[in-house]
Length: 485
Image 1: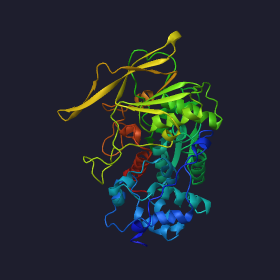
Image 2: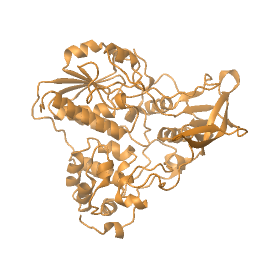
Image 3: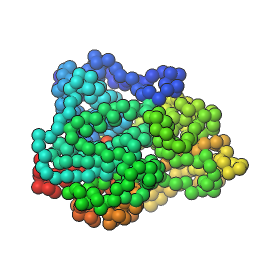
Image 4: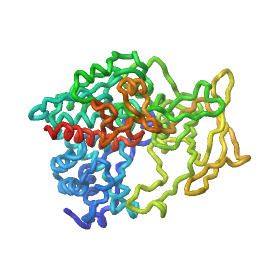
């Protein structure tokens, strides 16, 4: 490495955020960027550790030490070339990835890992600013055509690599624009959608065809957009027109809370709430609205989606926000049972949490109530967790009930399985016990002409894992056709 003692001489420095009083009045990205000199200093902290566990932990297998060294030396072009070799979309992961690599960084053993995610973002944005990122159409085509159904992170990744391997790729997306969860799930203050448009334009220039507003088969499009909102194509047409169909339609069936009062109006799934706000910013008329203005907002779910709801509700002018998590409060530091280099379950305070709101842990929601068919209050209780026969068992604590005022309830409890059951049936596919598309061998389904990748076969997970699965599917498809390129 350029400076093997950099981690001793330079302290970890994160980019930080724009002031709260400024950022809650807009939807612009909250994270700021360090200067190039500061970023190079942060890259100098990447030590000559011998075994790069960061590489081991990264789903897309980024080779961090190599591009960190180039960054430290001021070779931005070299850093980008190495980064691009493993990650097709560092502008996405550099903004929204939880940085599994940092938890496995050798310096992470002492809670002072290299700022890998922010360094990654600096490298790709610098590459765009310098004009280094240009379309790279394949030298030739191999004569095989693939239809990718679903333009979320897995579909975009698969299309990117299939195209570069010489396949003719058409991407079908039921929504108005490509991006899936990236566009309609993640708030603009974390990921400005112009960066998705920039990447899609590059992919189109490389020869990939995007057909948006096209529903393949029966079922629902992404994020609650009903069938019939665009054109509909019979899956059989794709089977006839393409050598292979790759389904990357995600796992978008949200977990439900089946308790008394759930039928009251004002109780909304989190991604419906977030999607409506993203569509409004984009100028897409959703035909309905859900606003937190002047309301007591109750967010049920303590993960990233719940935090995104907190940030969005604050920007909409919520009167008060409470976020509930049924699990116990995580520790501030890595617990003994999750030693380095494993991913630790520690307390995460996002930029949204810093903008206001109350957080509750070990709290279970029991019922909702309110006059005239609209939610006004939630009854919750404290819970206790104990291990029994190797499993954690939750018990409601008697007498611990209390009320929370709630004019708007947002359910942010994650997702279970694929929502496009009609499409799955039309193609004769099998699903597993979780409701995800069952694959055999690598990515092929019970229909030999149909493969699946990303959340549609694995269940809901991280954006970076979807990107990795899309790449793996593209490579497997190439092998399936005899290694054509």
